[in-house]
Image 1 (tube, one colour):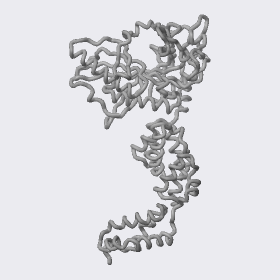
Image 2: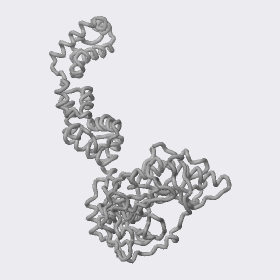
Image 3: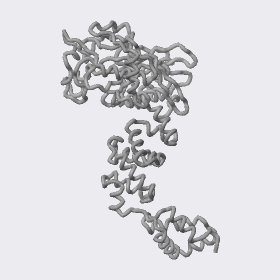
Image 4: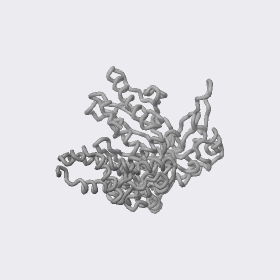
Length: 490
């Protein structure tokens, strides 16, 4: 991602805050026992509680609470000893109760932070709050004529809404922050992070002001953007639109907008409500939630190693560069794959990193596969590394073996035997080939004897060609130097 500070017109500054909606990976909904599985037929997973039918009572899903606390601890936030659910009133067709159960004055998580890096710049972004709430259903418009459909399967799915401080200043910073959050919630195992399915989506609040001023401008909110690239494009467009309006003498309307990926533009959807318009009040059907110190510590004990800690450990324990460690810890399954491979390969941490980053990820990307779908397991990759280490094959031959493994032709040993790729390490066998190559190339021998040391590379190449690349390269170089002597000696 390129830094997009250049997209902000001279003399202006953007003020950006993100509200990230993160669906929690529970098996049932936040206040009912309905399934949260994705892909069921419309309205097959909406119970009377999800629909807010008369006489029903919501009951908080304890797993959703635990996941929310996990997130708060992961971003060094305060966990509220007491939090309260509230009713947030507004009418939309996909919200059948006429209100959403959310949190307002007393959220579960407050005052956290996240550190981001854009280019060489490091910045800490405050997290104002993260509150639990229920998701709404979905309005469906495609396939209908002069009407819409409503699918309430998603209604009641547990969410945490993560609200940043308005401390982001460029689209690049916003995307870096969003990616960091995405990485954390997936590492924690509290969200699958699937943006296409709406499990992780963003509302972008954007305003502009003259550079050097401190007062906030009027903001707009672009709703439900579900890709990193679209968030960047939506914010960039909105910054430039607002500056153009203000420079032409107009004023910005506080409103909710939608981003259209086909045009790269935002468009007005409705006027933006303020908090008082929602008529918040504590939900009378739900008791306050108490999180005592012991509960919080019990949850803390379940936290996995987070990406920043794992990256530092990879650099320290495996001697990896910051770049390699960052790539390998980008996704938890990839980090687990690498560590399994290193353990099976009896160390060889740097060589394993090179093969995973360059060869395996390159092949998976070409095939459109995730690391969890790799045709070659970590143990099989480790066995390949071991065959390089014990000189059964050379690094060059290993590329051929790896390709065969990716094509399903077996593990490293099976491919090596089937294709006859075992490396020639016997000095006498290599010397026989060297002598033949020298005899066949008197002109090059004369050049070498005349002092042209680069001709040695020609002889190495000819020996490797004659042995089908199976001669040990170190042995070839050593034996050729012994046979030919120093360059320039007649």
